[in-house]
Length: 89
Image (cartoon, rainbow, N blue to C red; front, side):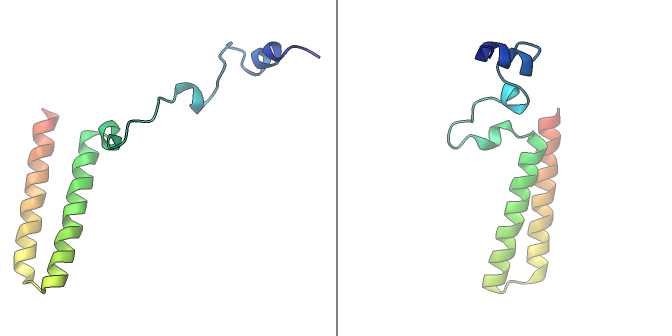
């Protein structure tokens, strides 16, 4: 039988030792750095969504007025849009 090097070369005609996703994958980011690889718009959307969940939980637990929560949500949306526009430029 042929050597393992020949078999690997036949499986990858380009001569690479790895193929597919494993060839182009980078090392995992260090702990706490997972959001650094996301696009800026997705980061803003995630933070906005998380903020809205916290706002909803706070409103539910404190039995707050609906109008105050709508105002806070609108202000959060305006702030997220302003941050997105600032990062985009």
